[in-house]
Amino acid sequence: MNRFIVCALTSGAFISISAIIACSTTTRPIGEVVENAPPSFTASDGGDGSTAEAPDAASEVLSYCPSDHCPTEYATCPTSDFPCDVNLLTDPKNCGTCGHACPTSGIGSESYECIDGRCAMVCSSGRFDCDGIPDNGCESSPWDQDSCGKCGVVCSDPTKPCLLQLGTVGKNIKACGCLAGQYCQGQCVDTTTADSNCGGCGQACPRNGDGGTVDPSLHMFYGCSNSECGHIKCESGWADCDGSPANGCETNMLSPNSCGDCNNICADGQFCKKDRSITGYPPQCMCPEGKSFCAYPYDTVSGTCVDFSSDSSNCGGCNVTCAGSVGAAGKCIKGKCKLDCVDGRADCNGNDADGCEVKVDTDPHNCGGCGIVCDAIAGQACVQGRCAVEPCSEVDGGEVVPR
Image (tube, rainbow, N blue to C red; front, top):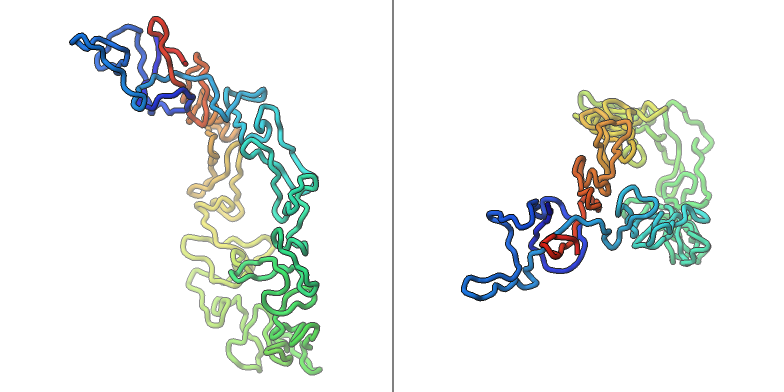
């Protein structure tokens, strides 16, 4: 019996990977006449004494056989579990060739990855390789005066050092000097409102005004406004909602009747808490329908709104984390933790204890999915989740074999 696969493809000798559905597979004894059999392009008598011509190369129909050869970028190495399971372009233990391992660590904060078959240095977050010299690793910090935020940004003016500050798009960035405000005591400040630098660096406002006293229960103090001291201000988390200086800043911004702002009333079923999902943790009416409030650890007045049915950190309840396993990440589905297999892995035995234990990208017994078996007798490899094939040739006797 001979197995062959017939595909309409451009001619050429190469190894390919193919899904079973990509080609029709036929098994029959050689020489058997089969009704509606695939066309044969061997020369034959055309019936009028002429000889039929084979199709041109562009439309040649080739036979394909199971292949035990590896595509160009793949190899079978001493560490292999299966044939052709090593990608020489990306495997850090076999980078470019079998056994050539990239360094596991550098001299500092850098690591190494295999990129296009070569070991490449990768800097960790907050470090740069600005001089291009591998021997000293990722030598630059985003705080350096000659690489402020990125390579090549030099802060040459000592009065305008590299500072972390709020950028124009609302995100913290590093830049030379202050993008807004004035540089005072190592930071950028707005001297029109800064209580410790009112109207200029180092000019602090007395919180009690001109030598007086302030009742602590009023939650107010004297501070800076329009670059001048002596203006009444509210302590953080409090507001003067009635406009009366006699009772100071009387309203707690965590009140359900003035949540984060005067007279912002929370709807029934909601309550006022600090939302830790927003920068600055402002008070918010929490939570919208379909979500539940989970308090931040050790802090009952702040937290986040979560969906117990899908949040993998709060699955079915607060702080219930879905743990991952071998080849799998934890995922919350309808309030219960499940395993979510990463690409190239599958759970074929149904046992959560060993996670997604099968590498369906390379396992010829589970190629592309559980139970999909490549031709073991031919030594057919599984590459990228597909059984490898290559063009076949006919030899004496009509047997179809790999070219």
